[in-house]
Length: 390
Image 1 (tube, helix red, strand yellow):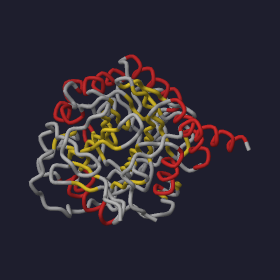
Image 2: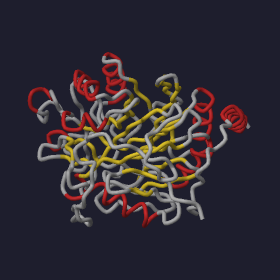
Image 3: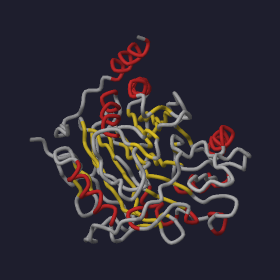
């Protein structure tokens, strides 16, 4: 199932793919709370822990800087800055992302916003006596902290997007727009950003009705194919897979969590690339997962927990590890290099650079174990290369 990734550029067939798919179309659970597991990787001599820029390598493993008009894109996993009204960071959240701002720097910075930015709408999803229901919100003005950290596009396609109902979802969009941030993830929403003259379409998917469907793969392919006709590059943000400290492995087949269909991560990701996607950014399990190259395109199956302000997310063991994925892509979608920089949630849940590179170690192991032929390869500084064919 996991064929070696070809290193040559995939021919761009945007219009043909889009028309074909369009013609074919015409024919809460909350955050997991299992016991955390002990780290399985010992710290090495990784160089990504400071957040300083790391030169990326091309697909053949060379160390030359990226050239040829490539743009850089960075992405994170789940982001919760706090939970109003009583569990908010000190100083109104000022400086919340200071530790990781340098690591996030890219031409386009994306994140998975795992909470609404809204006042209390009176329509929270959890009942008064709920024991296994989690709802989050942060004040609308916290969008400024995302902007100050460098984020440009935030994904709302996740199980907390509607924690305060449709009004909370709409308020989040307004809050982001007030601070010149774009959002993605609503049904049929394709967010196009101009990045140094390269058009990038970002599309969000989850298994919930307020977003593009992860489960309906045929319709998802139609959305991605349409996005491919609108932009040079297509990035898929997807909230997929079961939750918990024991959910680091990627296996073929549908994943369930608390009775919910959380999609077939491998089938979905491969189908989206076949439809025209150039990068898949996964999140949802609350732990890091491996990365795979398919048709020369990178799939990050889960970037784990990035921020859980005021301890809104469990930060013990693997549940506390995250990272920043940074890739360089040419306008035709071909790979021009990438890095993974390890982070962790500190004692208050803020994202913090990890000098021990625990996340990098785990992703390195998982990529080789789950994708022995097509898995991404990492060096000690987190540089990512595609496996050689054969």
